[in-house]
Length: 248
Image 1 (cartoon, rainbow, N blue to C red):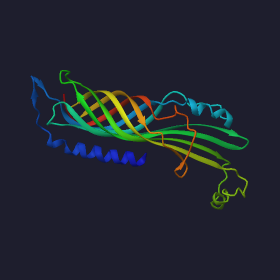
Image 2 (cartoon, helix red, strand yellow):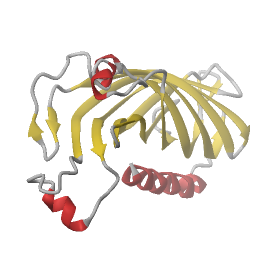
Image 3 (tube, rainbow, N blue to C red):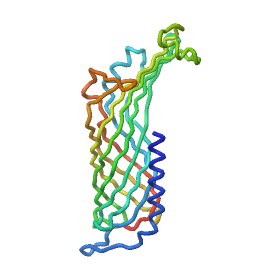
Image 4 (cartoon, rainbow, N blue to C red):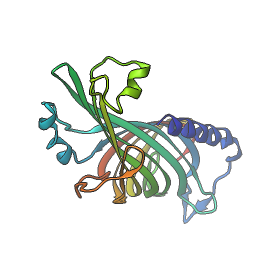
């Protein structure tokens, strides 16, 4: 997730720095063509399917359940293609996690659910809507779903981490990480409202479709029997604050 945030900050900085070179615009059928470029921070509220994970939690003694949405953080940016009126392209990245836990017989048991990814974005902004930008488009990219399972006594030592392999210290510290890497196709609808020529807020929505049945566990070992309904597909709502140059 840290790599994604650093990468997006770099993209955003390049986009904003390049804005000085975009001072011209064109007209199309009597409408002023949208133009500008921007980048900023985004918060995305995703709604994944937790059902198959929640079915396993009572056996671990965890009374909590995963429910509601998952808040992810990231960044995105775009630039209008001046050679194709009202079309803009860019990129985005996001990541976030949620956890449930419980203490059983002196051991802490925790399950962590995480989603993250990045994508290339393309959007068409309706030219007949003035003062704000209403855009439809899509994203093509990739991401990762992780399910982390932990049991720990809270008592760790350097030698103890090695002794765990033969359980010679009797601590019964256990951990497992299940991963699914996938490709994504995501239709989107976004509304950008400029507050000034250089500051805007975004509200948007979409649905992330994922394509991959390749699951691995720990050091990329194949795992079988994964539930078919457990995937990164998710409806989402996105908000953001953008800095750049806006003229629509």
